[in-house]
Image (tube, rainbow, N blue to C red; front, top):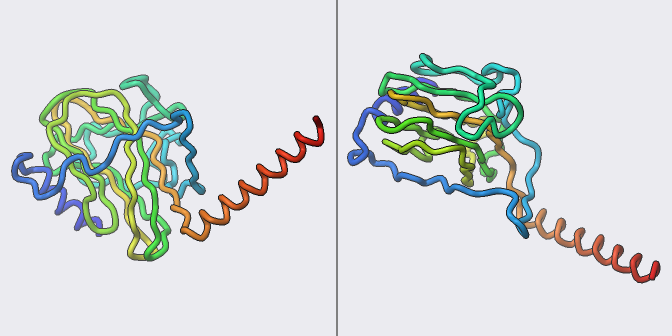
Length: 211
């Protein structure tokens, strides 16, 4: 599978933006903690998703690993979670990055979230790899501070590879706060909503009695 990732990355990241067969910007920036927005998520399935070990423990580095490291240096508005984040500046157009094998459930639906910044301009590219293929590839980005990106993914097997591949000739991409959480099934949502309703009713009765 790692060979597949690198071969695909080499073919795709080496193409000009106009030639890629992948859709750009398939990951939607989401600004968390907005008033009135409630987020439900289980435990994070990603190991060392914020690089708080100070290194790439839990991940396997692939491809061109030059100019790739974990740092506590403040840049791009980060780190966004904890004291460390990862910097990626591979010079090989084939790209380089990190991959992790995640325990999943076949047919299970997951929410992937991560924070990304770009310290420089083109030429550059990054891709997100999941379950045998890229779910997003973007090229020639201008610089931007950390943004949160999120998308919904489905697993086809009990073990799924999650990867981030980068190419950045003039500067660095920064990556932090990677999270993968199970999306509750409809029946689970119904039980949660019912439970919230029961709790809310109990609290209202308590306030009424106290008054």
